Figure 1 (spheres, one colour):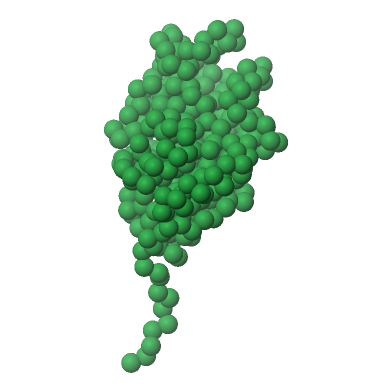
Figure 2 (tube, rainbow, N blue to C red):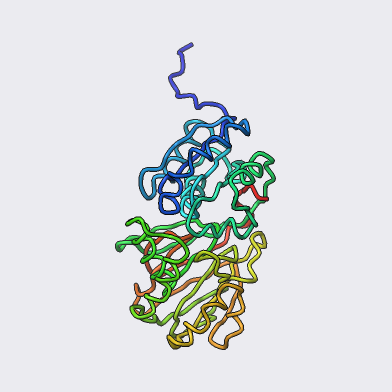
Length: 322
């Protein structure tokens, strides 16, 4: 009988793939990694550690490590953007179902808005204890199709996608992060600074086969969890496993009115303002005039522009929570 030359994949890996972004939190990852590493070793985690080197690198690391080495436990040491890339890596591999893989996080980012949703503590020792206990929650995942350099692309996300003004603020903040300047105060600075640069877009939003909104929009958020922008409660009614996307639209409004109401973004009370509308659904299509006028970010990562198609994938990723 002729011997098979087929490559045999390694069996399921009982180690943790620890994905470390040293640049997260404006190099906070680099400063704090020795402490976190020591805590993980003390907790007895069997680990294989990999450091991300550039934007998008974590997607490839995660996908390849699952496909070739059989990893089913992944720990992100980074911010919301690194978590987003890990999720995209999980969905771009074909070896296991997404819910067969356990994803945990030690938050060292600037915003840490996904962790805020689940009340993750600030202390690394407490976060490592949570990882060790291994309590999991199966959360919904959003996916958006968008345009990038005239091509269509897609991105999965586990927190919030922001459009319009929100995307501009995120873009400006990310540029400053790359220059070594980050934190909640930098985001707040860009929140005010971008007011004098942003131009409103005319949007049409469809859901369930009909147009549910049309008009000039200042900003728009759509997602699964409540927070973005380092603690702003953009989607106060969001439930992460209800199989629905939550949407908040803020119509065109005056700059002074925006400045006066910034504080209301942090407790969700801004949705009571007359220029704010909210929606819920499984699918949304967002078109702008002109066609590519609306820019997009997901989980703090600047992506591309409209037209945009959003869908929910119900209970699709298994995450370690408090």
